[in-house]
Amino acid sequence: MAGEVGIDMLAGPSEILVIADELANAHYVAADLLSQAEHDAMASAVLITPSADLARQVATSLEQQLNRLARAGVAREALENYGALFVVERLDDAFALANTIAPEHLELQLQDPWPWLGRVEHAGAVFLGTNTPEPVGDYFAGPNHVLPTAGTARFASALGWKTSSRKPAWCTTRARPSNATPGPSCASPSSKASAPMPLRCGCAWNE
Image (tube, rainbow, N blue to C red):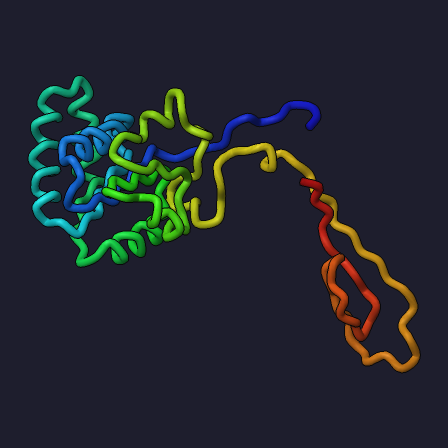
């Protein structure tokens, strides 16, 4: 790196999505939703659960905790405009919906979250288990606090050293054999397949 180097990115309003099963603590879920809703009026706080009972309990707890929250006005506006409680049939449906939303922060408040981690395709950061609230990642235990927002987790990752790293492209050609079939072809450096035209290209990346 050289010159002025950006250490952050233009991030949107904070987002949290919680996938919770019927055994989740409704007060914990509500508190975690509010932890992001209080950031600003455009923050997004979403719960997806297969349990209608839990959704009702979370809605009740949200109202109770809002009454004690210093930034209740901001949090309430965020919940009204960008909050949602989704009740789905199965946890599989919850993960399908979460991958469509591609949240900045994803909490798995499940009795056993680890087997489900592989179902996460698009999320900035994932927090596993009841005792791992999203604010833990904000302040002292998270691998990264600079995360993609507004659905960009579908194609972007957290800020890391690769964000500012270079990987030069390369190409090489040699004379076409007289009996070669017309038409160029590219291959990776490790490819052993023969090409009609001896053109090889790729990108160098040293881990």
